[in-house]
Amino acid sequence: MVDSQLAKNRSTSDQRMETCRSEFEPLLFELIRNGEKRGWKAAEIAMALADAADDVILKLARETKSKH
Image (cartoon, rainbow, N blue to C red):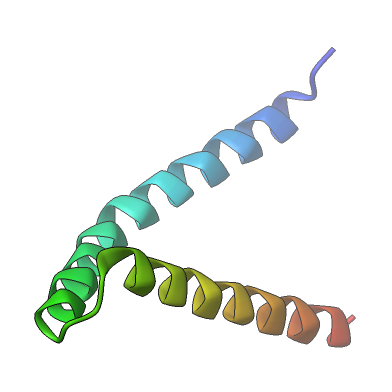
């Protein structure tokens, strides 16, 4: 049997992620459009942004781990 609180937390987390993405995804596309105007290819920009996002995730994970 699935713990109802766990299912509720997962649902809330999924909703927050969806809301966050819908809020920030347009900004991502704006960054890509601006980068293309400067001569970069969309794939290059997307990869650079993904790489930078990965670095931020790793940094946040290290900070969270060091607090425990």
